Length: 110
Length: 115
Image (cartoon, rainbow over the protein chains, first blue to last red):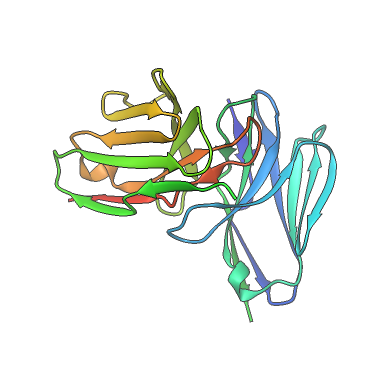
């Protein structure tokens, strides 16, 4: 079966840095995605990793270690608007659907 | 950027009726689209893979006779919830990718409430 684990909830304060971890055990691996989802809205794309290492995009960075089945999303200089659910997703085989973790609800306070 | 449009965004229907949800790729052709369902505070669960010109592939536990999927063109897939019941109330979202293994673009989602 497919299994993607991430913490259920996290809290942080404005201006801080937060790291959201994701571990996966899937039948195959063709890439890992991070999405942001605000309540009642569709997910929006944040990052994509297929090779080991760190991908940086502005305030957001994502890291992947395929040998460990592990990824993290790093959010810097947190803002109130970053309060949302963050979804880790894996494509097990080429051309198949994304398989999502349960999501991590991040609450940013002032 | 690529856009996937989903309609309607909200629908309320009576028990026993059917509801059709449309998913369109606006500026690209999508031979494959995916339908997900999301319950409150839960993750997206894949329901089925919609293939243009052929039958959809359903995930285990999803009733194909209840959730009818039609992918008649390269830009349109429809999900029809037949004989809806209150337990079918959920957030339904479609997605499509321009190329294999690239980011999935999501529709706006449809909030279905069955009363």
